Image: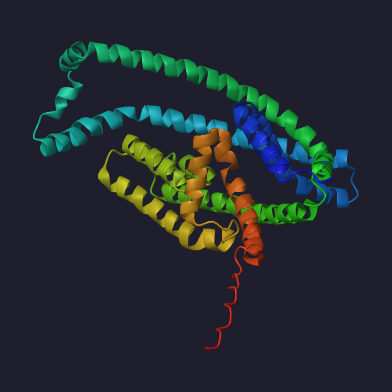
Length: 363
């Protein structure tokens, strides 16, 4: 006896509700699954070369860990050096603020903006708004406590994700086979076709996006280094690393580069050069890197990509941002198949008009 057609949508709805309720707990598992999905092609390549699954997983796992550790050994001292230089340059930033920024603000507002740095004036303002200061203090303390919990949670994720990654890589074929065995037999060919198309598209997109991130980070880093910014290399590669979110890399890079430029030089000319570097980088990324390396892999327009990321973050937080583009790509493939079925259905086809009764001859 065939099951009612409403059972499958009900099951999918229940699974979606459970995933939504468990979203905060699922973050390390989703991160490990995504990393395992990215690493599985390397494992399969080693298996085809004659290695066993366990040996191939161990090689990929240890190689990835070694690369990450070497990257940290290079980046952490550089980050510390850049941070020290930034702190040493704070007096230059304060001097620029007093000698350039405040006179400019005073001239535009027709008021003496230097009172903002007057301790007596600041104390008077605080006394007149002491209730607001008290509420602000409570908000800051609450945020600090939540930030402390977030740091502990992040540290736990850093320990848990590598462990989960090893087991997911080792058991990846078994996981895929079990999911395949659970599919309804009448829907299995269609679902397998959709999954294969989604996997091919996502893998091509990820490879292209990673290459764009590396090249864009190199462009930013070299440009900021050429204009003489001491922290240019670090800022450039950080901007490239977060550029997988549209416009986030450029925003983070511009803000960090402006602050570093004010600390190091404190003039307008270097700020203009910072703008030129990021304008050139964004132009190269928009008109060359993304069209050539990523192209239309994901099948979504830039507004649709931005909406998918914002919707994912609103619904599921950080895990939603991580899954936004993969989920949007899968939904895009699914909608294409639904569109094909719709175009072949009776709903889309023209309904033939019922022929009228032939006119009766006049008597």
